[in-house]
Length: 195
Image (tube, rainbow, N blue to C red; front, side):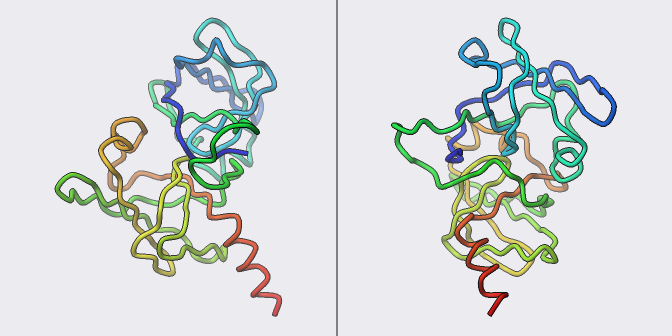
């Protein structure tokens, strides 16, 4: 389980294909603190560390992960938001995040707002996922609050700290991102469909 509070950025330094799997070698400042078999969220996608050498570790993504997230579009040099699994005795600063991407979305606009930025994302509503005003959403692993909720799009506002310390600083209109909708909202929506 994660909280959506990004610990740092990693840089993809090597990509190797093996059958339908892809191995990503990622360099980050805390690689020497990781352990093999540890869960680590990459742009919101929970992957298992399978190897570590100095400041580079390796994770493997299967075909379904590559198809249902934006990880398949990573290239050498891509930067990713990183978060280690939540400690049971730590503060819960974000919201409940599973590291299971529900679907992707496209960045439709970025508007500077005199000290902050509003990002608007459009997604396919056919999957039944919903957002609510002032509810939680995870965008590329970052826990955020929804504004301007609509049936197929929503916006979030980013403060300078978030923009500087996450991949929001390189996110452009047209880019594909990962979404994990609020777990409580997903269960409520599913229960409502049964009634």
